[in-house]
Length: 113
Length: 114
Image (cartoon, rainbow over all chains, first blue to last red):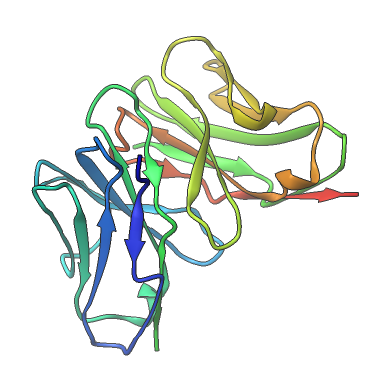
């Protein structure tokens, strides 16, 4: 059974640029959630995707967008990067119902300069 | 709206001593509650979860937590700390399963002294 994987591990971007982060779900999971974890803080819910549709969104602006593919992998896109976007971005996969558990990937560390 | 408060950003215990990490939540509906652990430069690992079954929940690595509705608390305990328990611990709440809009606390860093 393959766990949740994320790529890239680290990324450095310049303010104003765009970035795409990728996540592969754990086998058998059809739901993906994305979180932003700033240094020294807990993860903050960005949005969740289920069956290729956005299924709920936290308090993040529209420049944070996502996609889920038929194989349940997912992308997080951030446009017009700001310095405050520097954070660890975590992806978590789960089933939509039943176990209530999320399985987290190792994260992508984004630095915006 | 749901929220989570973790009391104490840092907790230090001696090896072999009791570990107690405090979590209070706010939820307008029966909550699902979780404790996660995060080691440096890693993602989060689920320690245990409460999903309206038994109020005393046992998790991995000897951790357990008790759901107390009257106190809106879900404190994490372990009878005897090990050096390997040193990590960041997060309490989280959701109004349903599958990670939907899960709200995390700010975290508590646990230090274990030899």
